[in-house]
Image 1 (cartoon, rainbow, N blue to C red):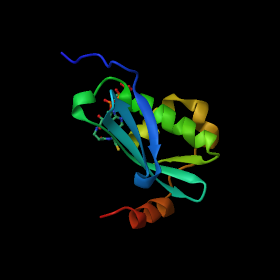
Image 2 (cartoon, protein in one colour):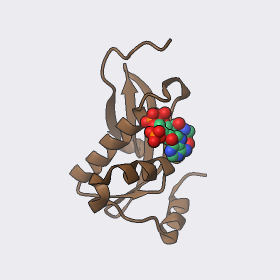
Image 3 (cartoon, rainbow, N blue to C red):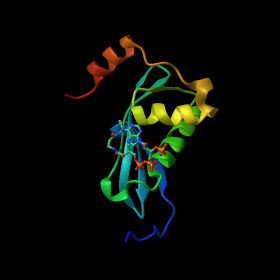
Image 4 (spheres, helix red, strand yellow):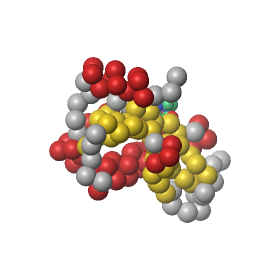
Amino acid sequence: MTQPAATAPSVQRVDAKHRYEILVDGETAGFTAYRDRDDRRVFYHTEIDDAFAGQGLASLLVQQALADVRVSGKRIVPVCPYVAKFLKKHDEFADITDPVTPELLQWLETVLPR
Ligand SMILES: CC(C)(COP(=O)(O)OP(=O)(O)OC[C@H]1O[C@@H](n2cnc3c(N)ncnc32)[C@H](O)[C@@H]1OP(=O)(O)O)[C@@H](O)C(=O)NCCC(=O)NCCS
């Protein structure tokens, strides 16, 4: 049986890696990755380690990442299907969400490592 976390999970922005990470008892349980284009933060992939799946950690991570985008005065572009699904359920971010466009997807291809 999975032991309950001794401390509440925490989310940190790691600019050098272009991602937000969620930590559980000091261990990185997952991340949501982004690239910035002007004032738009483009989220393209979210991942939670299998050992931490199904505990609502992705939801907590994305909630806090998007709140940080708002505080930073930026806008959200949800390329990642998980973030897109999250935004459909949480309309409090609708005012700072921009659509995914073909041009933006092309740009993303050029900045992501192969
Ligand atoms: C998707 C993923 C991040 C969810 O992590 P998690 O902490 O177990 O997720 P939560 O417990 O917060 O939420 C589970 C929800 O994720 C949804 N979900 C699972 N896989 C999904 C996917 N590929 N795309 C969108 N949503 C997904 C589930 O339907 C569930 O939705 P519900 O809350 O409406 O029932 C995790 O399963 C994972 O790392 N998967 C592999 C990578 C991946 O497919 N990432 C998403 C696309 S970039």
